[in-house]
Length: 288
Image (tube, rainbow, N blue to C red; front, side):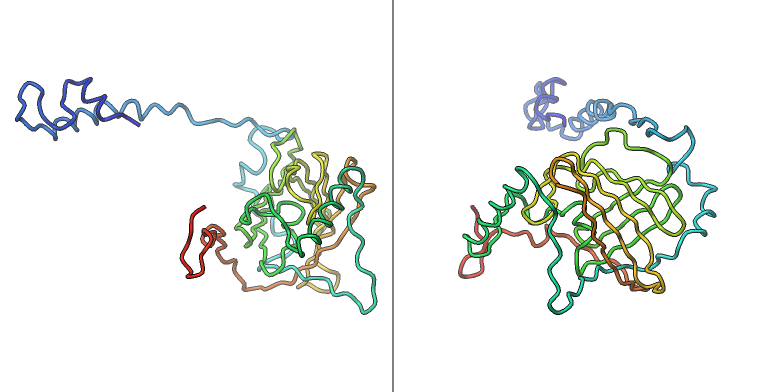
């Protein structure tokens, strides 16, 4: 940003709009014309557009960045059209609850301390982060009420989440994990085995919870096998296997099930719209 006063002084112009040699001669139009000419070159010097390197595993001119001419191959993929809503598993009467992730070491100790703190706090979960923060992987794949949508394009599968309006990219163009930047959803690469999408995910931020009160290390590794249920084209299954040699005694697998809404659409989800200050007894917002 240019400093109006500094530029006026540099050009010999009174910043209040008067010619310094003629105290009563207003020259605002000329002043701002000079300012525009002076500032324009500096503002234009933004440098060249970044040229990202070719991802590891891709040849130059290949993969998702070059989709033209490859859309025909999408016809061979399964029909996952519409939106899909996670179905909570129904427990049979008297059936035992599913076993929790087999945490070990400090991760188990921290989880047990978290459970005790919740009980001592009357069941209220204390949070250190924003309530508008998305859960990341693998939790984002089992959010009830808010549907997801799959988009097939050459070299990638894109998962759109209504919840928090998140976007997850699964690269199917042959690229590999090459020390990716950790993120909420990690780095996902996949391939098709018949009608099953096999997904391999690493680089999930260690700050992302594995489950409520559960943490993991930077070695978290998630494998998914996503496919339509046998004999039911309106049910999609995601077999999720989670492994972490530092945090888990052994890998564990769970299956998420989704129901199709063929003509459904994703709605906007703007968490910040309702992220307000606290309100007092009269309903007015307060400031801390």
